[in-house]
Image (tube, rainbow, N blue to C red):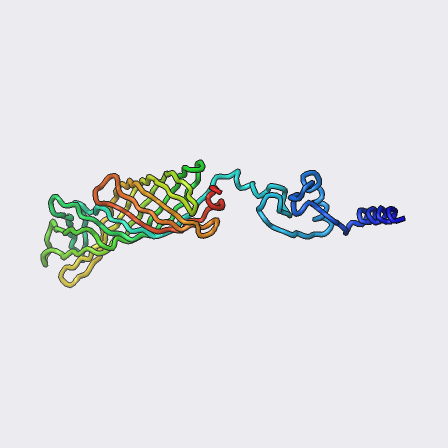
Length: 277
């Protein structure tokens, strides 16, 4: 009699749709889930409309197809970074020519530097860059740095002509700097973050401002200059979360002596821990 009652209870449990004694443990992670997990989970979701868990751990996921967590591995890693930099570089004023107008009079002037001395500009910049992983260790990207020249290299302006009241008095002010760079580098994972080296190269555009005084007239003028950039850098970063890292970078110019840069940044990665774990 007792075996008959147990058999009847088992048949009833299978016949009632709302009863499920055991299933594949959120995506087939339990033993035997490989065969019945996909079909069983689909049946369970249709019958109950529930979504019990949302985890990327293999075999412990509902509401997506099995192994959907690995879909992002089909795409390259993308890294977005933002930070602040300081740069020291040879001034681009050199022997640049400029002009300024006061009323009906126009004056031309030339920038002059001491002979044999290469004066340096100091600039503070905000940096934004996006890079793509070409392989596990190699990456390439684009970087834009924008800021101001806080301390222009020591130069003086010589006017080439004089007016009714003599020559204007030109005094240098601040400047605006934009660096547009391409970057390629290699990185190696550590237990806490990563270390890497890279090369950056591109174009630098600077607009130097001047304040001109002539008699009782005040005027603003500027000189625009372009220059090449080529730097070798070292970088190191520390993981704050699986997708967010804080880092520091330090580099030197391969074109000019005594030119260097340094900065701090935050980076957001499209793969947890940069895909290294």
